[in-house]
Image (cartoon, rainbow, N blue to C red; front, top):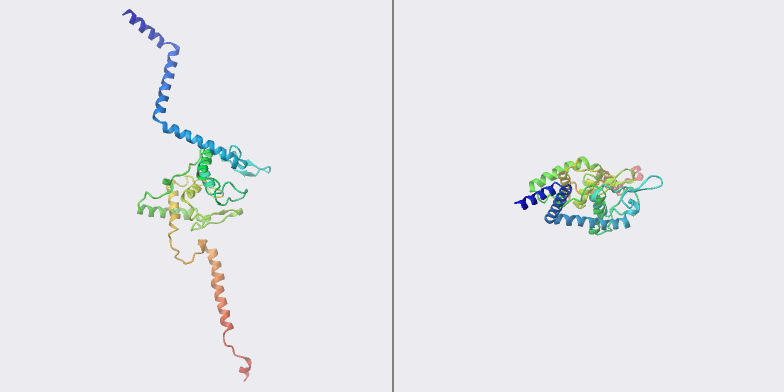
Length: 289
């Protein structure tokens, strides 16, 4: 009994010692870390994969993008104070996926508008660049097919989505992109590109990030469902018949009026001249006789 009492006394004294609390805290942290690593290996692997993607993307960025955007995406200005290329901190992976995925970046030379052209990078390299730019600061992520597809909706819901998307498009987009999405001219050398036939992912990213002269329609301005509805409306235009006949590319009343004057009225004037040239005329001699 005395030995047990002595052992209990020693243990109680050690528990009250200054190092006992620290030892218990360290032991608890080790146990929590071990349990977290054991039950969430997928998250640890995903974090490591994202870090690897960002590291590879930085190497691509330094070679192809740093000359204009800076080695850390801070942007570069000319000696006159003009912006050679904007900073990329906070633009998010969606902006990179749109700009690089549509071939607009890298630009051949600075200008008011970046035209669409064949892509320079592969899909894997685009994902790596997007991962690196996303690591510079929080921004919109690359959307998934569930964000812009109506595949999971019923036929009635798809029709409703097309109607809602058409109303949103006619209210917010036709001033620049034309009522059929055929694009149009913009001030100061810019233009609104044709968006009919563009993959839905890039249309969604354009609304989300606002490239070039386009306004940014964040999720606070247009909800993800409303963006999806706009894309559904644009997709419906492919199957819509041209009730007016030859639509001249859907560019609006200016080319239609020009075609009407040159072709329609021009043909009528030419026909009238032909009739006048081939009509039997009376001569003065016959009248005098």
